[in-house]
Image (cartoon, rainbow, N blue to C red; front, side, top):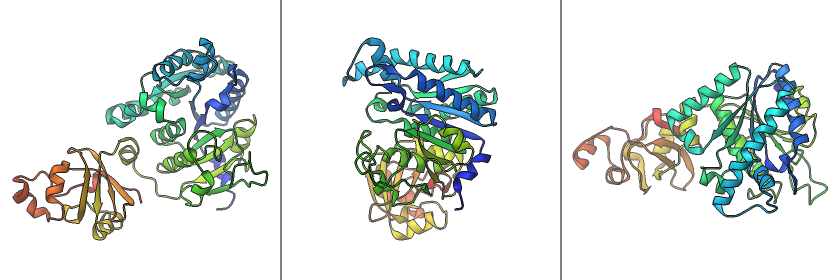
Length: 376
């Protein structure tokens, strides 16, 4: 691809994510100066005609400052309390900084369950779209006060990618403390080389990203890479970019080669399929023979019971299951028409035999093609 950064000039809708490491100063709480210049950069993007949604961290850190805590607590109830207190200060900081540029802001708090429920998912998308139409800057954060799983295991890289899918953004920008994605940790290896651009699905990127636990290892890039691949499902280009350089966002918008650009190299999937594959929690696994893998992946057909080799997990009708090949590799995800007990009884059998085995038949397919998304 020839100068992929240049293609960003004509893009319209951006999601920008900034993390706690950039938003806070050790022992001091929120970095108000950084919030101010970030607001100025967003104002410049908006002057260029771009729609922007901001995904931000920092509520826990802000709460710690207000509560006088010097060390991040481990107890869940204390984390929730800090997030609850800090969210007020965080939103006020953005609202004040953006007001200087004549930008109205709106707070959007989301949890994974908000996006996994189809009705609430559509409501969230409608609300964000309405705010953008009104020229308001949505400021999105996880609802840490009630989302216990998100505090323990979630990350705002994933939330940013989900937001990009939700509003069908053109670009996802992940601001970090590194210039981009390096072949080794630049804080350890002074000869580390930064990758300028790549396809998001490039398997060699996994070795470069390293461990995803924390911001150590190789810069905590694994979650950012996963976010880029998630964003690619809706056709979004992801840029991993340093948030320490105040002019980086406007340089990026001008097509300059800053950061690491990961372009989508897969066909975008429909909005409902994005929701299905990206927001529901799998309840089980169905192992398929090679013939069934070929039928659903290459021919785009429904999954019939005859192609099923094994059933794992305890799932009910209508829940999401992973479909894998005989080697355990995931090839698809879908909403199953039968429970795990029923699926175990009819696996390997023809659709015509379902009524004889179960005494009834709901659907001839185990998973209909309209509820099936190929992920391989």
